[in-house]
Length: 97
Image (cartoon, rainbow, N blue to C red; front, side, top):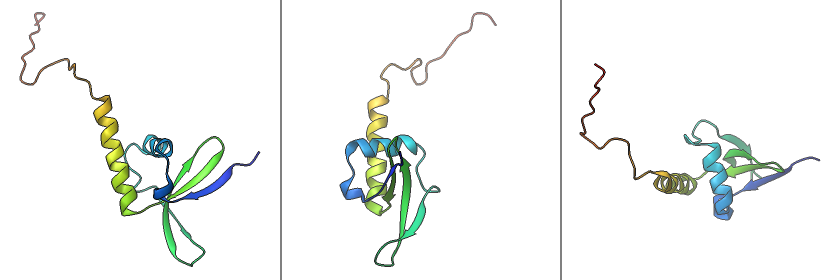
């Protein structure tokens, strides 16, 4: 069965789709964009994203970049651990030396 092909604007992205985008491009998508010409003849920049059943092109805009970075920051805040192995400035001794 062929995959669906969908062009999405950032305004219509679901939180799940945003999470997939962040997961697919953990270091950002600056160098992974593609260009296509829309029905109005305008050149559009987009980020490819593929799921099991759908190929997406997510149109890139300044707002998408801001939402992407904000989502990424939220994910980092959620995964930060409060239990670090060493405190800042803590000395570690090695008795074997």
